[in-house]
Amino acid sequence: MDIRQLEAFVYTAKYQSFSLAAQKLYLSQPTVSSHICNLEKELHTQLLQRTTKTLSMTPAGRRLYSYAAEILDLRHKAILELTSQQEALLHIGVSSVPSLHLLPELLAAYHVQAPEVRFRTSCSDSLDVIRKVSEGGCDIGLAGTKTAAPGCGFLPVTSDELVLAAPNTPHFREYQQQKEPLRALLREPFLSSPDQYIEPFLPPDTPRLEVTASDDGAILSMVAGGLGVSVLSSFSLVGYEGQVRVLQLEKPIALRLGAAVKSVNTIGTSARMFLTFLREYYAKDDTQ
Image (tube, rainbow, N blue to C red):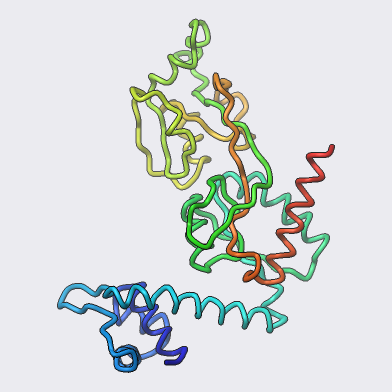
């Protein structure tokens, strides 16, 4: 068993395709097939179930996959640790609210402290950020959802208040005159995105208007356009003053923003240093 065989197996299982695995590994398809065949012979068991239309892992294949993925991840981290040029590269996955309202300030402050570190950032919803961290695609993830991914921890760093945002139009301004404007507004179409935090707290009869949106900013633009109401992070409302009306929730709900990481014992030095910086940066704010 060697690294090339494990790579061939993991990539084929991940993409459920020999040809796609070959493209990702810059190998020929027969070479990938040969690596997996030799691995199956060595282990005396079938790892992949092949049909004319599908490709899936056998029970033995699923067991091996977790070990093989961890081996490849550790190999990747070892290379980064021992290569000074790559060690100074920090890949941060970030969800919508932190990407717009936390990350720019954080990176500017950290650059003063560690100018040698280069950053690569990728923005997606919180669950996708956590998935990337769990799979080793990011060193650190900044998100607004506590992770339940196996082998992945969550370090709370700050919090933000959730508020109800409504269009600033005559129709919606009339709600302000009602005895319970919040309850009345929740009977309007509610805009919900994949990164929403409020769903468990809404009344069961709240009409939903499901929207496929990449971030809270897109939802907020729709609210400002009069499409409906939503509950969003107060951070995301910066720049929309006058375009939306804001109501406080009856029971305050805090959105915990934090860093998703794999075990601190396995992440690289740059990631550990950035986590230390995060703790100190927000601890300073708490004492002011």
